[in-house]
Every structure is written in C-alpha cells, then in structure tokens.
Image (tube, rainbow, N blue to C red; front, top):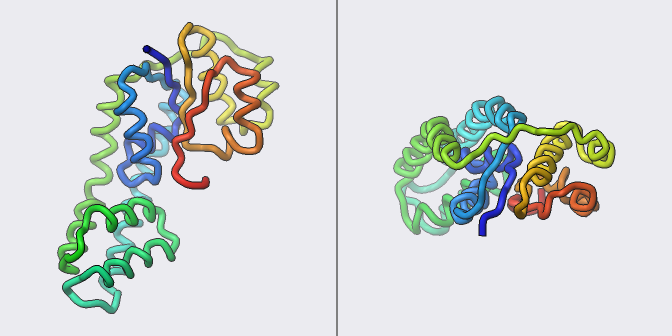
Length: 222
C-alpha cells in the first residue's frame, strides 16, 4: 500500500551523513520502506544544505581526535580484545561527537585483533570519506524525493502548535499541508523527539493536524 512520509531535516542529515548517530535508523527506514512516497520542503532542503558541511567537518574531526587518542594510548602495537575493549570504552567515556558510530565500528568492523597502525589508517580513511559520502547519499535520496510546496497558510494550526519551536513548527505545518492535500496515510519522520514527541507534543500534533503518525527514528534517549 502506498503512503506518504514527510522527512524532517534530521532524517535527511541522518541518512546522508555516515557518522551521524541516527544514520542506521534513517537508512533502514528509507531503504526498507520502498512503497513510501518521500517528501521534503524547501525549508528542509535549505536547513540540510546549511548544516551538511558543518556536520561533516565536526564528525570527521571527532574521528581524527579519536585517532590521536589511540596514538597516545599506552598499548601494544598488536591490539587484542582487551585493548580494543579499552579503546571502545574510551570512546564512551569521553565527549566525542562521533561516539555512537565509533562504538559500533569497534563492535562490528574491527574484529578481535588488529595492528594499531592499521586501525589508525582505517579511521583516517573514514574521516577523509565523510565529505564525499553525503553527496552520493543525497543524490540517491533525491531520486525518490518530491519537493512539497505548502499550498495554504494554516494560521489556525500554527497557533495550536505554539509549544513547538518556531523553526520546527514551520516544518510540522508543511507536513500537515501534505496530509491535507493527499488522501493517503501520511507520516512525519523525525530524529528530534525533544521537539516533536516528548512531553505530550506528539499527542498534541496528531490531534490538531492531519498527520497520521510520527515516526521517531532517534537512537537512544535524545
């Protein structure tokens, strides 16, 4: 059955930025739900374009910071399970913007033994690829996206959404407009539960708009 999904900016970022904490959830949602018609607005596109370079650079630098930590660490050149576990825990115990990706990287992509230099080389290569990956992913996503232009002002709805921050409120209204103009099930996909889910916000949005469902793709408690 065909249905519509309006993507919040964070979902586009999460899908296009390899090291984003929500990348896996966003990728699975978008690539597994092939029957969905995907929509974004000019607002979402503009926010994504403004954020992608900053986010990519921040995450690449976070990986390079971890490489520096590895080189400074007092460990053997041949890293075994205990040393890798300590490095993995170091990622979790420090403030690192790429911590979720790095934690998964150690759990799934390294194995039980690896040379210290090889590990650093792999991480450096990953950091270099961060900026090219979003371009490829966005082109792939664009092939499925439809740009939705809001057809109505919905002033009454905007007043009812006063508890949603103003920038997010605009995107929510655009998703509502899509739902009003399409006679199919309409989801709003987000990685921002703080502004769209928590504290009764989800219930309020679903009550006052024509959005049928809010899909929370965030990892953990955000």
